[in-house]
Length: 80
Image (cartoon, rainbow, N blue to C red; front, side, top):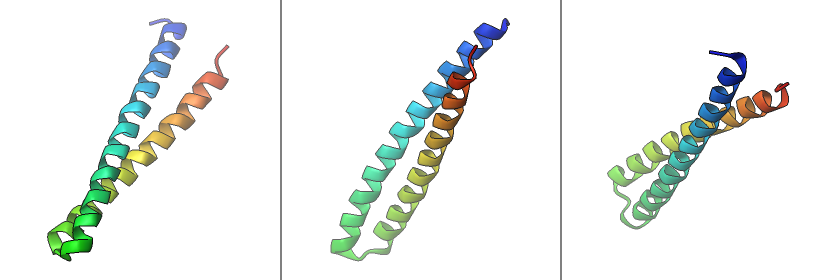
């Protein structure tokens, strides 16, 4: 594979990974908010556990999004 083609593949895959992880982060954050609302009214342990689970997933996906953005910025700034 040529260097130009490899760089192009790297940019597109990084961009795709950032987009997918961003969508997942947003989706899980919405679910965490819904679980928080349910916990507020029911005080059920399962709602609290769901809220924490979705918040953790959302945080991890958001971190992956941020790393992808950093890698994408590096790839674009170092392009010849």
